[in-house]
Amino acid sequence: MRKFLAAAFAVLASLSWMAPVHAQTPGNMLAELGILGRWAADCTKPPSGPNPHLVFERTATGPGAQYTVIFAPNSSTTRSIDNVRIVKPGVVAMRFTTTTGESTGLAFDITMLLEPARYRVVGSTGSDGKVYIKDGIVVATGAANPWQNKCPD
Image (cartoon, rainbow, N blue to C red; front, side, top):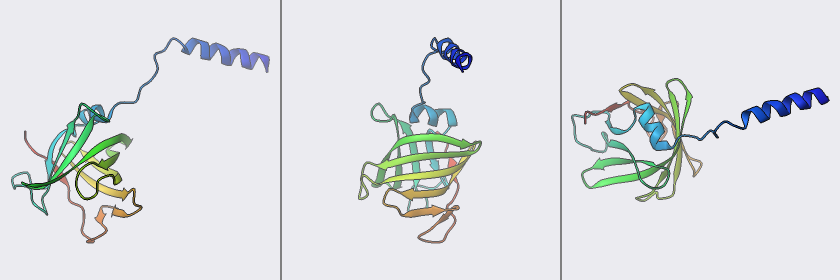
């Protein structure tokens, strides 16, 4: 037992010189994953109810990232991006908190399939306990949640 404890102490002591590991900020993760920028089901059409545009961007405050859903020229909502993590290759999970609009304060845990130039949310559960998207289907309508394509800058 003494030899085990001595060996364990030696390993811990040898690691003490290493810098602490820090989790990446949401803004850095979005940049690394290529998510920053504008997205829409059809980038050639203006924002509308069936074709909202989503803008992912870095911020100087808070967790360092947010996204804005533009429903129409004068209708949008903004959400802070509080957490971004890679579940497995091609699958990303995020937590959003609504900061503007009717649902201010409501958070969403989402899972998305991510490809180089498009993504699709396949799961979304609100902090209110409501499931909004399950297995890629929008629960309220029964329709498939569409792929969002990266729009040119």
